[in-house]
Image (cartoon, rainbow, N blue to C red):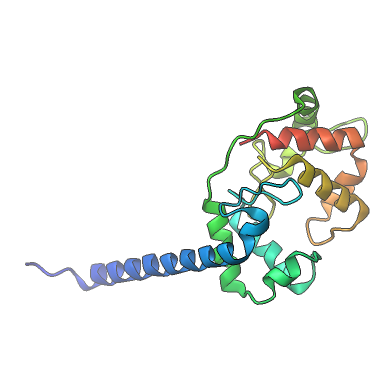
Length: 201
């Protein structure tokens, strides 16, 4: 049997090691999720209560940054601080990759007319009040970026609460642009955008 060239053999060994490392990482994430996260966020990141964010499909780097901020105290939550206290950066990365890999679902919008208003604000903003289009940062489909969260499919109640916390400066660990945007949104616009986003996949 012909032997593989040394370079090819090294590549195969490295790939196998990487696969094994990724499997170990996924196993660690599942262990943490089953021990802590599932209580509020569900095993697959599909939280049943609108007061907790859906994490399924959330951007990996964004999840990692939020977990780091909770641990450092940059983002404050009486529920989250104890959950991350004994976790490290490797755990945060594992959780970020795990939740990013979870399937997302389409969720029914309760008030379709309100969501239509939200669709306009999200895509075009409000030039009369100076509200920028949400899509300019979070993308046309609400998928966000490594730095910005995926908003598509998020619980409307949770999204609304976050916008209000940006407005009141109760949340300061993220993009400062959100403080300005949130301060210009009316109550109706806030609810409308949240309703629209909840129905995106």
